[in-house]
Length: 217
Image 1 (cartoon, rainbow, N blue to C red):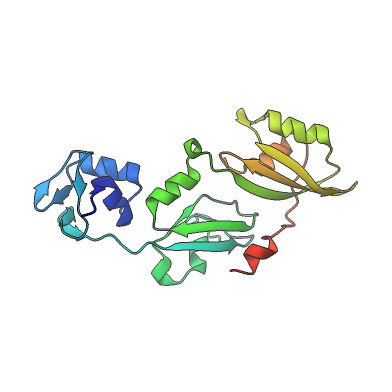
Image 2 (cartoon, one colour; image 1 turned 90 degrees about the horizontal axis):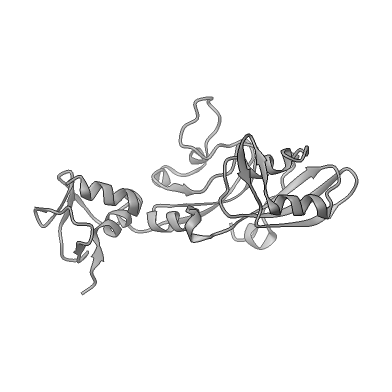
């Protein structure tokens, strides 16, 4: 007999993240075997108990994990008020319910995970779990150790503190450099803003995925 917490069951069914599922339970919207349950510590047996949300039966769905190489010129939201192409337009209709674990901006390309596993998505994106995000940036101009150390110490851009956990020069010359950054949070346009704070521009020329990942797509 396998028992799971009710909020995890809701997350596994694709209702919402585990945290959001807790609010759904507290609101009295969930019934287990016909009885309203508002206790967050309540557990259910997935193969035996009948769970309803707003009067409709729930079943834990098959979990889907998709790795996608997001191209430039695509936004990660489901709809864009400016009419730009979206990440979800690249997917078959049967995967339209997936959500992305993190985002890349319109002009960036790289690996994006899409899933219906709310718990995994939370663990990949919430800062408290310490999952670092790795980026390659092509930066205009010469990049030296002093600039990299500044990014690691932290900078301010538009009143917000930004910092890299790690910064490494991959290649460089007088006109441009390729820099690898590791970030803890992945704030909005954080890579570009880090370099903009130092008067540098990130080139739209992307680096793509490492060959080992690209071959598995």
